[in-house]
Length: 263
Length: 327
Image 1 (cartoon, each protein chain N blue to C red):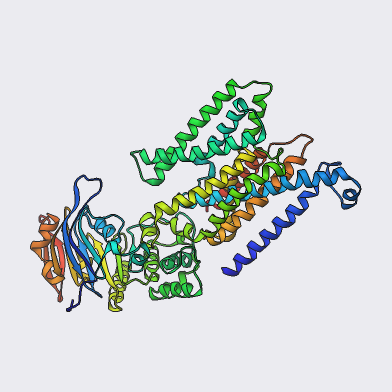
Image 2: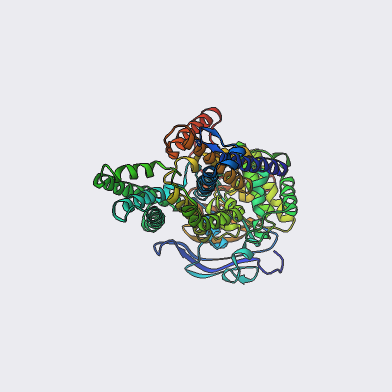
């Protein structure tokens, strides 16, 4: 957030899937190195689509996306995969890979086209597992993991990719409180080590807990963006979710309450 | 994990080599059982039989099994579905139609039947791919599966039509026997022509087995790992179907190999294609080799190979599913 250049930026980006309705409209945003950024908004706001565009999965209809100061189109597929890792919202793995084998797939951007991973890559994969505190899962089958473990393994695969930018699509959506806390702590640690984190969520509490900056989206547009303290207010959140809610100060932080009618 | 790979693969390779060597001496000449070296020295006919009939047949059995199994594993991983098999993209039914068509209208000579079967197998794949691009429903996988079902049904109807039109005394038995699958007509002369395409395709699959792991992930994940899923899938698909079309043109429809062997291979060495692909190649070769040994010796006449692979394949499949669950 200092005087750095943004590591990732979007400039007036428009996007539609088949030339129909614009799913993203005039999106501009800047993400700085080593920060945690939350894209917050109701379901269907275009958050996942935004991640897919940053990944290069679809080209914008208009506007430009820059990664590391260069337009997305100037990166090769391989060089981009060394810049940006993705933890998808869900990853169904139909075959019974072992955890270490799956995490090893994160090393693919560092291999030549037909090259197999070597001892260096196995070391990197094991290190990613250790960093996430799940080294003991290495030989387990992916299909035998609990929901929280599964999510940690997905993140480990992305961490093994050793990219400066990490995108996560709803990383805590289906997790219980303990696992949620574990993953949010992890995101903060990764940022402290220099990784730039950008994640989507529909839950303001998650953004409040770890994000440095917050991007509020609704119906394909960015309504507000900036430091969490400025953006996560009663007025702005109410407008984003179009539902009555209140942001209350508690113990030096804030909580978001749904404004239900009294019982 | 790595040591386990070397050991299991080594044993499979050893079993395949020993099995192939022994199979050459196993048969019904001069009487059911082993052909011993003494006899071979004394009997010129035996030596000729060994060289001209059994050797190409044993080599073909290994190649058919290896190709169908490796293709099966590849397609299962590309389609992220463990129940897919090499024939389902319209390839098997296409080949069947091509063979029946040649038997009826192109003169019934073995090379013609074989070439026609291969051509129609590839046409089946192309039709499926083309139709999938025009379906306005579902994602890539669902569209390919639906198009494959439709194309298979079209060719299958065509085969039914040809069988109806065929001369019931000469052409129909030939079509039926071709459809049941078998290697009784294998000689060096029709085996060697399919060798280049099959070996090339299998080499591509073998070299690209790490990419296969990557492509078995969710589309967006594969993309984020630097893959170009569309293009890479097409190359692997062509290799898998190329190998299948080549061996089907020689052996007819040999069912269940491409479905059951990858399951067995995964059970032996795990899901990672770095091990599962070589294991499928070797295990598939061994499986069809043993089935064909039975096919040519169990009775005085030839038992169609496809019947034996389906019978033992389906039985093994049911046994595994009821005992251990899918893998």
